[in-house]
Length: 185
Image 1 (cartoon, rainbow, N blue to C red):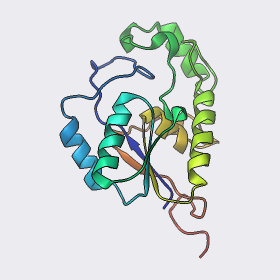
Image 2 (cartoon, rainbow, N blue to C red):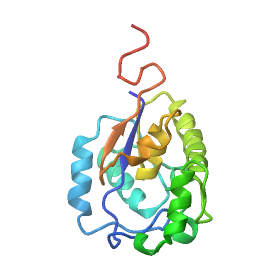
Image 3 (tube, rainbow, N blue to C red):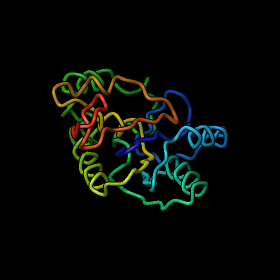
């Protein structure tokens, strides 16, 4: 087993708000959601987290309940949406959304990060943590999880796949193919 990516629990934010790197707290449903994540999480030896509060709260809960070491990694933050941060998606100008959709991988109409920049940052972090050769749970964001699982030939596909709050995704390690079969067989 390699890296297990865990999306944070529900944040304390209004529906429909763009909140990439905004440092939000957790919703009042945190205790129940955190317990559900903990019970579904495979056995790991370390917890790593985005520094944002909505991730740190879950990571600290898991680490404390499991007496595991906890590391914080800045590279695991959500995408920086620049000028869109804190705005309702419905108020983001349509021309900016269209510009982003036309060049999803490289466009930055908001002035923040491009998806390519996010993928590069996340790829470097995951490579470093994978090199430790131990099962690690990484508590992070939907955009980070999607960037980690994006196909090189189709970078948009994985960004359209939903991952719910508290969702858990296991990345195959270097010795497994994507179907989960060992390459040593």
